[in-house]
Length: 345
Ligand code: PHE
Image 1 (cartoon, helix red, strand yellow):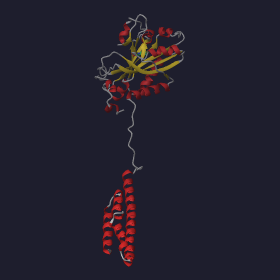
Image 2: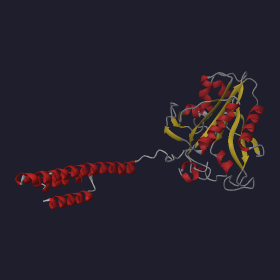
Image 3: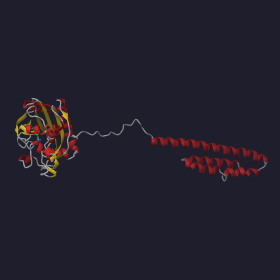
Image 4: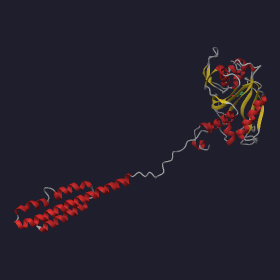
C-alpha cells in the first residue's frame, strides 16, 4: 500500500506538470483528488486495516493529499501569473510610441493669391466686401452703362439663368465683379475704398488661358480729388508688391463702358520674358486687369454727384497672377484637382 501511495503521488505530480492552462486544473483535481480518485479509494480502504497499520498508512495518505493540494494551489498561482503576463505583453499600450502623423492640408494656390491680394490692398486702407454669384441684369450690365442691345454686351459671353429682357429682371451668373461697384455705392457714401474678391462665370470655350469659372478682385475708390494718377500709382505699387520691382508693367488705353478713360494693365510674360509663347498668346505680355475712372453716369445712377466726387475702379483676373509668378502654363490645372499639381504650392 505504501508503494501504491508513492506511485499515485508521482503520477499525479507528473500529470499536474503537464497542465499548461488554468482550464486544465479542475479536471486534474477531479481525477486526482476527487471522490472517485485512487487516493480517495485508499483513504476509504483504511477502515478495514488493523489499527497499527491504519495509523501509519492513514497519516501517509493524508500527507499525500495535503501535499497534492498545495501543489495544485502553487500551480494555479503560477498559471494565473503567467496568464496575466502574456495578456499584458499582448495588450500593452506603449504611450511612448510616436503617434500616426495627420497629413496637414494646405490652401489652394488661388486662395493663397486672394489672401495676398487682399492683404496688399487692406494695407493701403481698402475694405473687403463680397457679393452674390447670381446677379440681376441691372447690376451686371445696365447700371454699368450696358443697356439691352448695347454692343458692349458682346464683350461678355453670358450664362443666363432666366432671360426677361423687357422687365429688366433677367438673372445671370455674374460675368465680372463690377456689379459690386453699384451695390457698394448704393449703400455707402464717399469716401469709399473697397475691394471685392469673388467667382465670375463666362460661357467660354476653355483653353490654356480661359476657364468658364474663374476669380476676379474688383477695386473701387471714390472720394474728392481722385485722379488717374492715383489709379496708376496704386496699381503700379500693387504689381510691384506682387511681382517684384524688376517686373515690367504695361499701362495703356482700353475700353469699358463704365469707366472713362479706361485702361488695361499687363505684366511681362514670366514664361518667355517678352519673347512670345503659348501662355501670352505670342504677345510677350499678360493682361491682368482692366481699370479706369468711374464714369459720371454710373455715379449719377447711385446718387453720387460727379461734380463733387470722382474715383477709380479696377478688376483683375486672379488665376493669372500665380500663372505669371510660377510659370504655370495652363489655367485648367487649378480646377482639375490633381494633388501632384496642388501640393507644389
Ligand atoms: N469688369 C471688367 C472685366 O471683367 C474689368 C474692369 C473692372 C474694368 C473695373 C474697368 C473697371 O473685364
